[in-house]
Image (cartoon, rainbow, N blue to C red):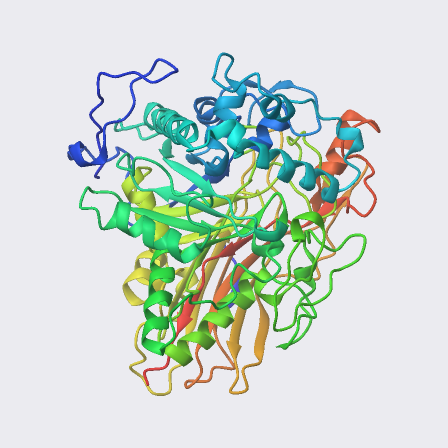
Length: 636
């Protein structure tokens, strides 16, 4: 059935010590002495859960690269901006201007680069022991953006200056200066999150203590954002400088947080694997040799990394046409916001890996894209009994101005190029807007990512949903009671002849009175599996809406033209189901075309706008949402 349709607590309290840090506020107490108390539930609570929108990837002046770009907003400022306050913001490559987002976020996490915590603090604090050293003066040196003729030039300068921050001249021979400065910055991060987390019954805004584990081996991006459930956190973050192997990051987070017996909980989110040269999701088990040992590592990875970042300002990481040993019809929507297509596509890594994506070098792998990493996970599960890549989807901005959430194409003021966008948002299904409820949603993968729009999307799977479920006013309740939501496994197959059936529904982004959201074009189901020879297969099914509706946009006014849908709902049964084959499904919801941010800048700011008439950059886009997958595993 496919049709349009019109319808559709516990918080952790941290005791503070009397001591003060360098910026005058009291630092959090050690995790071992934190007292956990119950708090009232939020006044707005829905047992059937609702989608809350947020940004889990934000950089402020604490991050070395953001600081280099001229960002001076700090974590507390970032949370103020996310809540809707007007601030003076300096977008990368643009002059400072006072701005605010049209719609506040429900939640956010500041994820500054932990490797740069100490160096930035020491080199930007007048009077510090090393402030006047040549290394710090070099780091603070003014940047002439006109000389950054390519990503390669800019990335190399970032890497060079980042090296200064960890030099002996800054940290000292024994590293003690950097150890102390790291703790100082980490305490500031925690204070900002505690100050702006709304623990009242109104629950208007939620924050998470977080940081970025920034791994850039040989100029390859293998980064992760580390998100803590509450205020109970380790004394210091585990950075790439401390543990350069991801396995040791997972083990360290489990040791210092989850297994510490303090009430600490944490997860890590791989971000934009499209620049990882195949390294983010390459099957690698360290010293584990036997299948049992490898299964143990795979289980650790799956438990610590239940999510992956599908989309952010550095482009799309869903899929790419023509990849090695990927079979199936061309998916024309895979061409969306590709970061490495200009001036020419990179070579294919095939069954290997490369290096240098951050400086526009090296090959691209199918494992740079989450669709194929999901299939690799199915293949590994067949081999060792555990799926290391059983992750759901999020999106965020990776914004470096300290101002989270400006994902509306018309409101973004920074530079935009081909494959570079304002970024996306993550939606989490939760009973309420509290840390515990949202973190549970993240942990169970009941999430979806968007390219910046606020589409309302739901995706359920079962064996016996009725064909008329879209007409049922209680369909969400029935969908939960008869099946599973996005992020889950299909329940055991009781009927030997049954084929999986999915409920998909979406509401258009309502937008604002001045800028209404764009109409929906279609809903799709994307399916992936591996065959007996190890080849990857993909299939895309249009299951709702009108793919060829002729909609477009007037580039002179950015007004959309043509028919679309306010709401879509579909009940779809897999016509090609193979009961003995592991498979994975997710939904993709696509809007009609709308103006891209570079075209909005041309229209509103004229030809001198930072991103107006960038060669290779399209002028329109089809915003979209990607739901977390649902997995099928044969009983055998």
